[in-house]
Length: 435
Image (cartoon, rainbow, N blue to C red; front, side, top):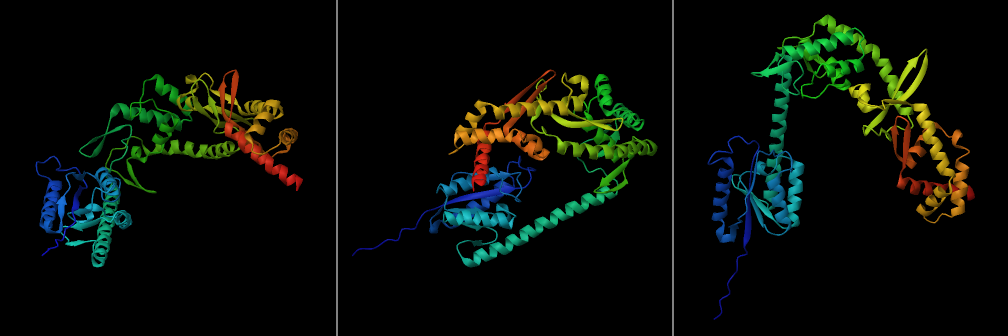
């Protein structure tokens, strides 16, 4: 008489543990160990079902459950994709994730490889439809709890600021932190007062950068102060003895470094510069070489700037090194925008007329006759002056990758893919003209 035996399939089980903070992880028996011990006991109780423990550990200590960017979880998912794991066992569902959206992604990844998972303390698994429903409900509450906790933290943060308590962030020049309170550093505070006084008197920020560098003054990070750093100091109401919360200010616990009269004078000067700053933004939008011109000596970008003399506007491109650290730091400093743009345009128009450009454009285009390319390029050159500035700028930026500027020289570097784009556009123009 033959007796058939039922073979129980083996289920390789992985235990996943997580803790949001690193606090206590250096203990001999920490919370990750406690989670793992409970999960291993649960797997042992299912031995009759063919469950056995995988040897690899998947522990994420000090990682939030609000996202999936966790090293052990990524390794677990990779092992699931490679077929090494059949079931995932966790102590509690929120150890896996606190996000409903992330949970849906994990369930999809598990289902794709026919992997189940079970929660030890909540006594369910994804093997049944009721288990899936229960998981979704529990996860919704976990996400709700996380959002409520975040709201409480934000409310506490706002309430503390309204009481004038500094809640951290970048430590400003002039202060140090002791017992979570801001205390004045006398030497740094004097530098801050100097900046406010000079600016209130109408001093040049560019010259101020040079003076501070010559005096050996440093920012809080130990680097020389540039113009952007000085403007951040001038806008920081901490120096007035206040704490800001969004658009509001409240009396702070810290002692003021700047008095109200000096602050008001400095900010009157700032407001006077506002129209000039708005005009500068308009100048930048009109700059043909914006984004492609750079100082060859400093290997830094050159940005559009301008000045007014006797009611006339003069445009320039200024090296970022000179702009931030003073003109003495860069040999190129600044170049007249009109002159440099005319030189670049001249080179572009010369290239458009050259036989070499015709051959390159013809070779880069697909199915364009060489004679059509030559005719189109020659036709483009005489009408250049009739093109709108924005169209001239588009063609310049299409054909040129970079313009390197030195005091008495410029180098124009072509954009290889620009020829291909130009060829396709010329081909379309030719089709339209023939139709």
